[in-house]
Image (tube, rainbow, N blue to C red; front, side, top):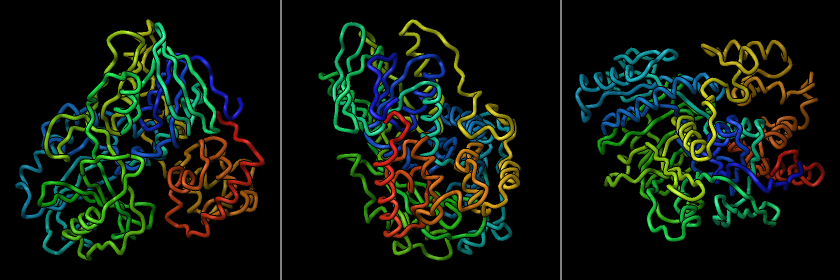
Length: 516
């Protein structure tokens, strides 16, 4: 299929290449629907790459009595740890107890509930700890003597989106990046959709059903499809994060509860850094132009400095990012208290149009499953759910296409290193974390480092760049350095310019095999 080939007819057209759109595309393609997904920018180009990068039940949501959401998220946490153990793995969190917080007995009760709201097999239970004797206590202020430790999961959020899109593609879906939905018109019992393509041309797709998974743009797309619509069920909340050089030398993350009743996380990040976030600020304006403010930077630094023994300052920040979360508007005043649950709104008549309002990364697979089940019913078709039982690309550590009952990344990495002893250990670990069993496809037939090609920027060789262009829709240096990998943290401006030049030369010489 050529780079700009677009089918003229499909069962389902999905607008939005974030986690919900990619998850729905995967589920629908696996249940036999012909699927087209269009994304105006890169996959995970906005909200879905700007998260705190956690697969978690949402401990703080217990405070708002969202027990159903927490239970659903905890159930999915266990599922996702098996589906993609290369990009999702267990993480232990230390929560210091400070004088302004709730009584310790009440926090223990909340953690007990968190441990038992859903079946838990892969993660250890919570416990009380003495920070004077725990390894995580050394980085904290001496006044903090007691705390708690509990379990959740870490996720490479942008790669989770790409892997869902990749599985959808391999199941027959058309994934059209840098393709904007510009018009939607009903015609009989179907939709006529106009797409603006990456090369500047237009294409028309005749679709039986549409999913609006446009994230922060979902209300705008709803008005495009239904011109008389005056209000959509979204509230836009900005969340910002900062990354600083590593603040502690152990594998634990921290959850800090602050006097304003908000929480922030401090998480080990990319071996040499610490990720701190997030903020919750109401947002208006263009989501594509979202950026962290000076006030948010100061807030995150000040809140982290309340706990860490050494102050965190804006001067230490090496990277910052912001995203606009399209949350379900439940009419609460406090942005931090807005529900992270989702609502699926299916048009009652006419050709099916399903709006996705709200949601969070942890529950994306459940959301997708429910969305496709509703759409199949409207389309007069049936097919059973399946996505909980098939690993995402690269997640089959032990047997091709099969889930590992208890995934063991260290054993998988040791096997990879045994097959490729010539690859430096740090590079082997990065390949296995990003690509899982598909790391073999990145390496290909190479048997010495020289066969991986030129090192384009620190840590990125031509073989990996070619793989990402040919298999994962990467087009720009930003795609490669910030969403497919995080090598941008280790690059200088001159490195990026050299990569840009290589990408331009390759694009002129070798068209990508992908559909957009």
